[in-house]
Image (tube, rainbow, N blue to C red):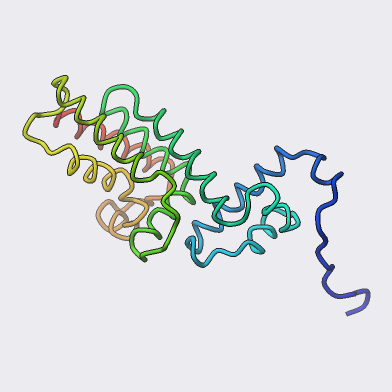
Length: 203
């Protein structure tokens, strides 16, 4: 091909590149990592592919995050923080918020599906601690009378988590049952409202 000179070799980031706009660069890398993890799972995702998606030298990923595991830990920490913020308010609204959050953060939610159905060996970056905190929060709601006393908070959390993410890991079934596109904003809003109504009946 006329004018083709082959692939441009990658270079190590120089100090000026590191200082140019580090926060914006980090944000691009994290966004790219979320997409790559969601598309392929943690184990199959490659740092070079993440760098290509972000349009950066892959050395920057090591520089800012220490590699793929560091990227995952950063993303997990942010998700736990956001999840903790979502867990405030009446339980029905909490569940509704998680349904809509799953729609807005589909790549991260898809990674959670990868992890659970494929045995993907992702780092346990506080996941167990975060989930135990959610069980404790449900138990507190139970003691306050919001949740029926004969429900096991652990089983309830598992059921509500599965229900909130059902359209993500069962899209074909959702489409066959409802005749609607489970990835559409309209259906997400409708499903979130219906699940919240179910929880109100429960509580």
